[in-house]
Image (tube, rainbow, N blue to C red; front, side, top):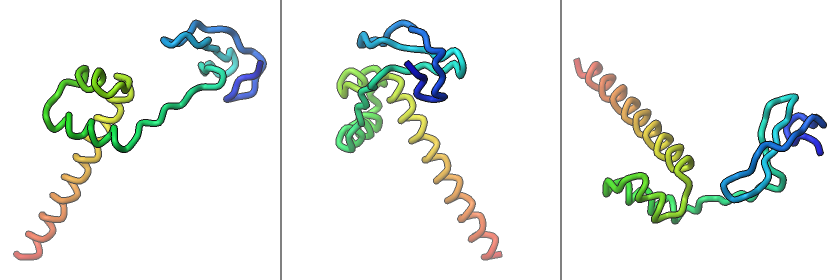
Length: 104
């Protein structure tokens, strides 16, 4: 078996996932992987539901239970949303400051 990242043959078993799939670790690049990973894309409908639940101040644990997404993915999604909001706020604030300076 070869590493899917560096193509090395130095691959060993490294436990299993929470769903029971065998995990492997490459001794060359230290990357972990599973064979034939099943990628579950989170649909736009689910993301819209999560956005609504976040606005209702539902806990992250409650959102995970009701939408069947992983805690890790949800935390990533919330962090991304927060970063986008902060960036948009800072851009708007900079534009307002420029407008106010031009009025003087």
